[in-house]
Image (cartoon, rainbow, N blue to C red):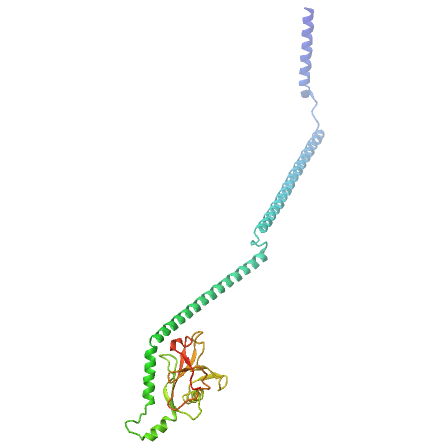
Length: 302
């Protein structure tokens, strides 16, 4: 019983102390006006300090954020530069800067222009080759026609020469002595390039004793104003290059001028073959080393 009483007293004491402690603040003495002002000022200073602290923290955060952005931008630029360098290294065609790009563009334009010129030249060459083929084909056709009509042309020429060589005064029955004298002083000359090109039809021309085929050719071309060109002098080395502006090799590698006297192709130059009254001289243009004319060189008046 006594023990329980002690415990009860102890509990009451603890409870009383708790009450006094909890309610002690309500028994404090009220602050004066000055003390309240001082306390308020201290609280404001504490608030101001907290505000500045918060502002500093915000500024530090903003500054740190700006630094992070700058670093990120620098890192991005560095990555772009590295990527661009890698592209340039792998693909040399890609220009590294604006100047390189301009130079590359000029190079490409130059290549395009060269390519255009090349194709133009190739086209011109093809066109020229086509024209040459057409000319060769035309010459081949003419050659074939010439071979086909060779006999007919020879007959025509012979007939014309006969008609021309015959005196035109038969109807008048000239004196035989005068006719003989006339025949002894003239020969018949003709120049034929092709069936369509005949610079000189069979024409009589007077000769003097000792005149050669070349001497008479020079004289008759001058009289009829026909162009003629030769080299090697007027002797054994004389060679007729062109007549009526048609020269050797003008119509192929085997083309050039040949002559025949009384139907015979002499085996010597025109500068050494003498003419006799009544001869028929023909200058003919060959395109196949005389094969198209049936030329068979023979010894003549040696």
